[in-house]
Length: 365
Ligand SMILES: Nc1ncnc2c1ncn2[C@@H]1O[C@H](COP(=O)(O)OP(=O)(O)OP(=O)(O)O)[C@@H](O)[C@H]1O
Image (cartoon, rainbow, N blue to C red):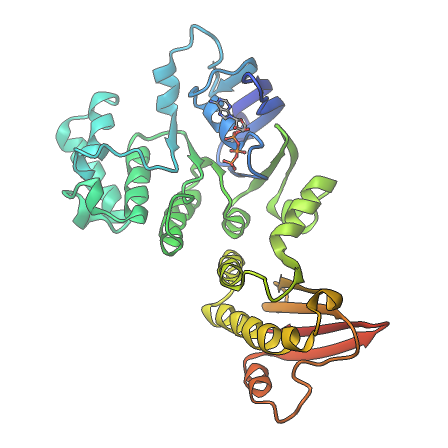
């Protein structure tokens, strides 16, 4: 079907000192899975909250399934039934069991019998591997389990559209995957969804369309291939480039290495590097940078060491590029060097280049 399920026309939201939405107009069709990405504070959550009437737009019109929801006479509850929303913070009732949480809306708003609501709830919990938690309380579940239960509760209301507001941002990294796989399953069933997310690999894999939001507008709207591989506009290009490359410069002995190791791990995880690649990258930082480049640098500032880490999808490689000024210096130039041999064993390729007083040490993992 090709008709719009949501039409947004000249939507604007202003607060006293900020205008998170400037002038958003867009059509969303049934079955589309739209990920909304972009820098912090650019109106992504505000857009979802306006669509779900959790915020009152300052100007503009929103039409959901033929109903003008921005009209003062619109019955908010009817609109909300068409639209489920999943929040960062789960929003389960702490004093009710998981199955009670899932049954409540079905009984109160859809008019289902308790038995029907229970059966549907159990079916959904079974589908996502949580049937054995039906009689537990939210506090007895992990963050990932709570979020999966919150999604089941939303799905139980048979919405036409589900809005997800950063559904994995509050989770421990180990639990992100289980929640994303439930959302992926819904996409596979043809559910219309809008997802504000910072999980770029997921956004790319699961979406039919991406909104790149910047400074209160949908700055670029395109397919995942367009936005991630071939963005048409300048600010999208800069944002996407920053996602793909981890860049650090002016590395000296005072550099916060423990913090950098964590950043490297997070970056690697977001790029879906294997655990082996992440470990190898950390080892390279330890051996090449801390044991070789920095001690050899003399006055490190003069060498001006910088590092870029980048993922090459084509070759499934993590590439680390160290750049530094000064005389030609290969950190593992000595054939007998033990750590050099170890790093060589873990990497696919190693290369040292020198031109015009500038060294580049490149290592592919
Ligand atoms: N209730 C509010 N009152 C005042 N300002 C608000 C309110 N809600 C949001 N804002 C401001 O509006 C701007 C956009 O916020 P919004 O949460 O939509 O951004 P976002 O793109 O979702 O960011 P993030 O990725 O960090 O969640 C921010 O500057 C925020 O501080």
